[in-house]
Length: 99
Image 1 (cartoon, helix red, strand yellow):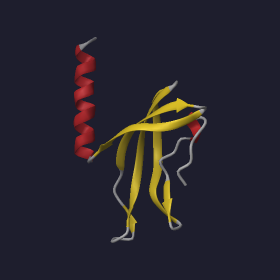
Image 2 (image 1 turned 180 degrees about the horizontal axis):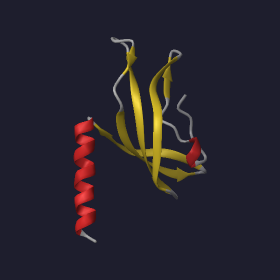
Image 3 (image 1 turned 90 degrees about the horizontal axis):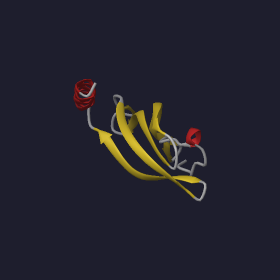
């Protein structure tokens, strides 16, 4: 289910294996557009042992458009809600300091 995207709207982190949606994209925010595109995703991951989806997770992904297709270049997975809150807090502090 991971196919190349030719537009930003076609980019998805949904991932399916053996008819099970392993990574389920819940939401996204496009942080930057262009030849280099950055998107933050909210998602859940299928946990086979529990036969249910995980708590919400977050990932920031960078894509580069080459030959009319967006190709993944890098990613950063935010490991927990606590880490997400710390990132938000740091960015909020730094942006307020620079005003």
